[in-house]
Amino acid sequence: MSNRQIKSDVILIGAGIMSATLGTLLKELAPDWKITVFEKLEKAGEESSHELNNAGTGHAALCELNYTSEKKDGSIDIKKAINVNEQFHVSRQFWSYLVNNKLINNPQDFIMPLPHMSLVQGKENVEFLKKRHETMIKNPLFEGMEFSNDSETLKKWIPLIMENRPEDEDIAATKIDTGTDVNFGALTRMLIDHLKAKDVDVNYNHSVESLKQASDGSWEVHVHDLDGCKMEYHSAKFVFLGAGGGSLELLQKSGIPEGKHIGGFPISGLFLACNKPEVAEQHHAKVYGKAKVGAPPMSVPHLDTRYIDNKKSLLFGPFAGFSPKFLKTGSNMDLFASVKPHNITTLLAAGVKEMGLTKYLIQQLMLSKEQRMEELRDFIPNANSDDWDIIVAGQRVQVIKDTEAGGKGTLQFGTEVVSASDGSIAALLGASPGASTAVHVMLEVLNKCFPQHINEWETKIKEMIPSYGLSLAENPELLKEINATTDKALGLK
Image (cartoon, rainbow, N blue to C red; front, side, top):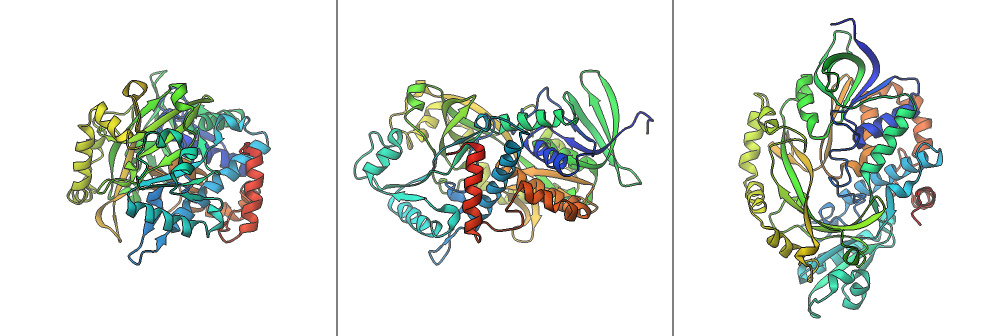
């Protein structure tokens, strides 16, 4: 290789929320390590982390009905909700540490308090929601969650949604005031600015073309400087592939066996957006409904209050779209290029199994704006088409892999880390809850890829995340203490 090789301890590929979080953690744990970031675009957080590409829910399982399920005996399984909620608490603790130590400023620029609500219609769904509420409030994580099927109460909670509804409609909601709206684009930019101030080398307009492992276990990375129209040669002991939908291609280029038999299926999202102040002012919550029968989990309809640049707007969706691109700024050849001899049977098996998803996507693609408005009117009966515009959200690449539980070609709905057995490279794949659980997921990367350092880092990790290694659901006193300190640091009261 060329003697112009530039050495780093860590290379982070992609300047989104995941790389920004991992880089920030490592700078606190190993301040002397040399970290280099490569981003293909001109700025940080422009793809999946961008505020208009990301629903900004602050996924804490307070309102998302797909994180709880009804078992055959009629009881409600809330295990997944507990996991996601605890993971969001990890993020809150880390962000609070950064604010308290003046490593980032003005938390109100990225996080705002906002009630989280679940809304259902129909007798059976109302019964389900009531049982779900009864189960969840027994757990300290969901303390303060209220249930109501009283129309007068609901009119106070969600006036815009309740206007012009028939009085005898079966409708119910739960509400919890400890939810948040998170602007992950703003947070990503804050973290990257912090890393630059700590002498991390952040390179924009740099596209990683190839990577291969050297005989000493380090990684040789060829990078195209798009501004200078030249190739650069870098090496690092550890590489993180945090390039959103672009991570799968880089994982395949790495050649590690753990990256085999994995495919990706791109799904784009559309939202209806309302920036009209007099409409936006009538709604103050994130309200999640129930996915229609046969619809995939990522299609759960929700009406969100969003704060972007401290301006209030409403988003409703998501409506599924399709593009063969793995990134909004990607290539129409991305999906075809991701098909390899080692994953073709996995992909074909998924194609046979997911006929329902294919049908759903085709139906979604054919919707007119007025048909989308009709779906919105399930939430806001008086919605006026002139007040709402269609916006295209980010591309999500759903992971397809062979699993013991699901067999060959199983579509995964979640966030996954794939790492080499020697811990020298890790890739982040998948979608929701993604950004909300970034700190938990990056701690998982540290545990998998730096086991030799975890003992020496543990004291510092506990300083940043006091609940590290503990279950908050099983430690209600610690939960109370952490809620108080993070609320204060992040300005959530």
